[in-house]
Amino acid sequence: MLQKCLALLVACLCHDLDHRGTNNSFQIKASSPLAQLYTTSSMEHHHFDQSVMILNSCGNQILSNCTPDLAVYFRKRGGFFSMVKSKQCDLNREEVWEQVRGMMMTVCDIAAITKPWPIQKQD
Image 1 (spheres, rainbow, N blue to C red):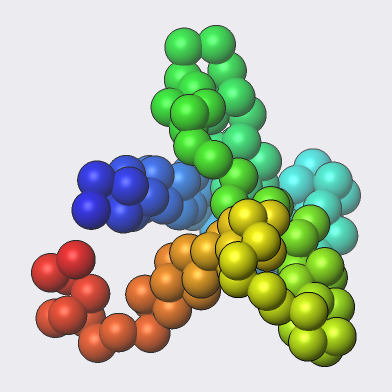
Image 2 (cartoon, rainbow, N blue to C red):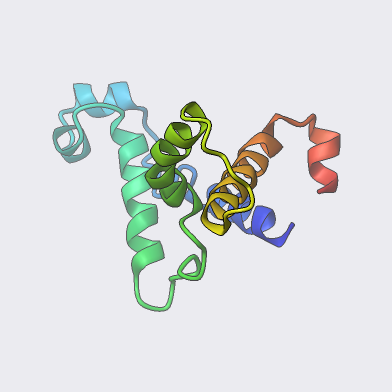
């Protein structure tokens, strides 16, 4: 629950960070530095880059202890699918069990967002 609250707080703080009061179309028509720097979705790229810069600055690294779960998932998913296709899914082997367990945890994390809001809010 604490991780979800932190994620929501960071998302809220980063959304529209350093907004200039104009939209992407205005930035392009005005040939602003942001429009020249980012060829598409200028403001969204700017919000993201500003957020990353702040979160990576010394003393602001509040996410440094978080694990890169999805990065691990994408690195391991090919091996998992190969194992399933070859039907070599022997759960008595520790490395197989670890891979299956990791995939189940990722599925649970990702699937949580599909719950109706009243149920999701209780988690």
